[in-house]
Length: 92
Image (cartoon, rainbow, N blue to C red; front, side):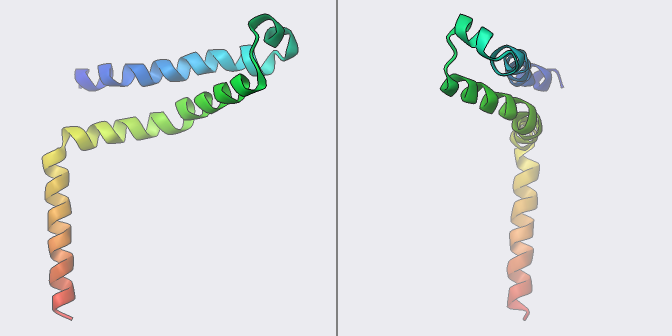
């Protein structure tokens, strides 16, 4: 459990950093862009990073960590499922 908590920290930091950048780069508009020199390309990349950090990474990373930490269980289930499927096809 502690290893998973530490493993999730970079992805949580990703989301927090891009959540901080969205009001600065996107919502503040031209004044901030003239001060920070964000181009439209930069603003689009910040929007993409925000979407990744709040939609994709929070759901994908814990699942991938579970798959990695429970490899033997996943392999056992996958092999049994493949074997069961091949036996069912032979009996037809």
